[in-house]
Length: 253
Image 1 (cartoon, rainbow, N blue to C red):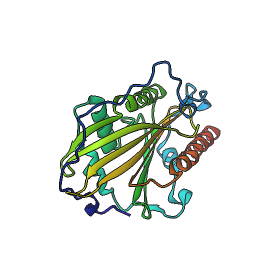
Image 2: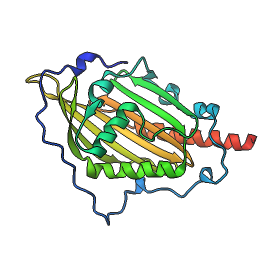
Image 3: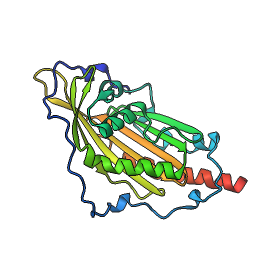
Image 4: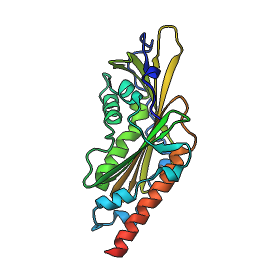
């Protein structure tokens, strides 16, 4: 279900503080268990064939994997353009906003890419699931950058064209131990809908998982509360399916 444009009406600016980064994590602090890279799998071995177009498509999740109320999307949610197309003075925070707006967190794929977009009409939510052929070293650099963002962009302000000023907060989020390396972020965007109204919040969960040389990227967003357990369910199913597709390809080679 597409979020209506009325949900993004703006009559004033959100009173927020100037762009400031959150506290940096201690250099000696160990990573959370869910975010530690797992041992490298056979998918990362040299000589592994590049993911094919058919394999990338076969590795996607479907609405049948998630069940009701998820359905095929009827278009881009209006909060995507209304809130993610924004500018800020902090370079890393701007890079994050640009990546979320362009659906391009891991950069151009080294090979085929497949994407599916699903809507949850009950929660006014939308998810985008992407499978990319890539290079392990490039993906690991992206994951390392994502891990710095809760410290560098924990809390900052951004300016949009239609929604005025918004407060953006970025925090790390735990992911199931799937794939070879992974990182999750929760991004909360708060803005003033109209003069005298209570602030509204868009909540986004971003997850990037490296599986050998391939990437799985999941973004789920909702105006308010995200559907429970969606990230874990999608990643558990999707990463397993990608591994099965890869195994089938090796067996047929």
